[in-house]
Length: 147
Image 1 (tube, rainbow, N blue to C red):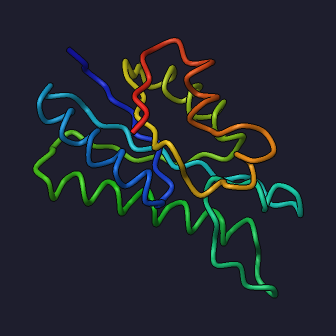
Image 2 (spheres, rainbow, N blue to C red):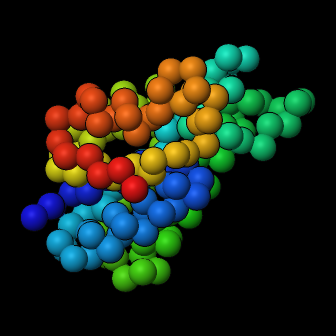
């Protein structure tokens, strides 16, 4: 059915539910699970629109904090999928606009399904620009499952 399934994971409750579904589906299909966490390059506006919120130390490097938080989220999702018995799992972090980046990486990695949560950490972005899941469903060339 599916050979490569991408899960867009940001650590939110919605993405956790999506990870659970994606893991179960990947096990059922004997598919490779590709975990992707997207973060935004830090600017005052972009920090408020990021898919992943870091523990931002006012004196520290904000981009590095965002990258570290994204890496932790991606690694957590990968560990959880492996703990559930899935052997074929890879995890990536990317910077960029979340919906476009999710679709671009899915194409690059040859994913034939994208799984996203209906609500993530980007509540401000949802209010101003429309939800990431809605945007992904509109621009993806492969099927998208919104959990």
